[in-house]
Length: 468
Ligand SMILES: Cc1cc2nc3c(=O)[nH]c(=O)nc-3n(C[C@H](O)[C@H](O)[C@H](O)COP(=O)(O)OP(=O)(O)OC[C@H]3O[C@@H](n4cnc5c(N)ncnc54)[C@H](O)[C@@H]3O)c2cc1C
Image (cartoon, rainbow, N blue to C red; front, side):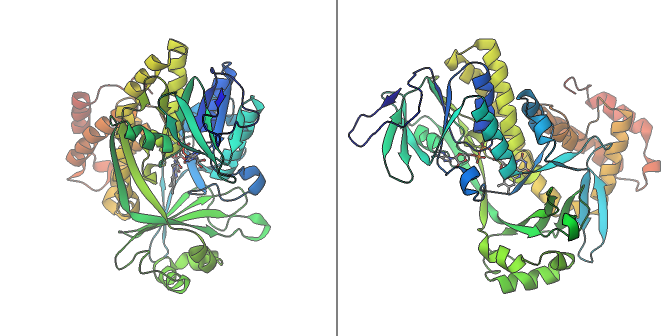
């Protein structure tokens, strides 16, 4: 129900006049996905999004232009009946293609076979497809409406129209914040004085750049790989697009000798690229414009608890647990939130208080775990992937997995190709690292692996995984 407690608080048009409506704040990636499944189950759902409709204005969808979607995201999209549609606009990436300073290429497969891939998808295309599907399911999306928090005394959500400044309050049964890492709902929950909250900014930023398509919209470098230029303290990555381009992201410290602070002109950036990423120069004709025209983004890990207030308000996705992007899991994790939320809805029905509590109980230790693994993976991507010892260990991991497929599953595979709970992947990953260190300290050829020792250590320390 719409309320206008003050003269300036006018009703929004076309909002269902029902207290049973579920209000979602934010039509990014998670809001529309959750909305689709709620609407299918018969709930009236409305979404309020602060940005204009990107299908009309076609501005940048926001942060990074390409995302890697993997098992958890695919599962959630499949459950929502959307994966067939999405699978037409993805490019599978079978492994990492490392580019050395001298321009040599090394390919390292992600998984044990060609089915274990991650998939590059354009954030904008995915967002548009999700919004279209939500609307087709009867969800109304109100654009240009910024949530400014809650009226805690009445339980109504407050919005301000970005164009007119008009303020509105919206009554609904529950309000779910899918409004991203800087969530306005979460900020308002903090004011209630019970929210534990931590926010850790990385001292690195990122910038989006583009590798142009070749003649006939062909890819100019290997399309079925995630390209990495690891340079120790920083890195460049590139993900393929279906139009033949690559969406690149430069990760660089904010401050320091080689940083966004020192590379403060497109000329300096071009010199830097010529020296440090020489093989990209001919592929990036628009580097100067891209570098100076695109903003420098920041990355943050957000942890908070509780995620809900009295069964009335819940935060979910990045709003509850933003993570850094180095495991390619932020969206996958947020989509898994939707899977778990819907499973609990089956179990408890709209007993929102119980459902919200159980949801947080089921997710919190897992989202904390992926937050930690994502931070660890930054060092792996920008530095360790160039280290021959690391590459050798990866080979040993695959050999062990082939022999013990239910016991020794590499951490990357548990996170990316399976839906093993993140907290389990983290704890088993630590055990496996220790086993690998014990096994690999005395040889450098896979043929010399001491299988008896491997067998003894694995049987001793790793039970079979039930959730494969
Ligand atoms: C550089 C980079 C690369 C990444 N790569 C990957 C990857 O490869 N794989 C992966 O799984 N994840 C990746 N991620 C993470 C992923 O982008 C996020 O986890 C995901 O977008 C979270 O979805 P969300 O719906 O919670 O938030 P968002 O997608 O951020 O959506 C939030 C929405 O809420 C709206 N909003 C915000 N405030 C308000 C308000 N006050 N009122 C109304 N609306 C509001 C925003 O406009 C936005 O539309 C990456 C992130 C970055 C930064």
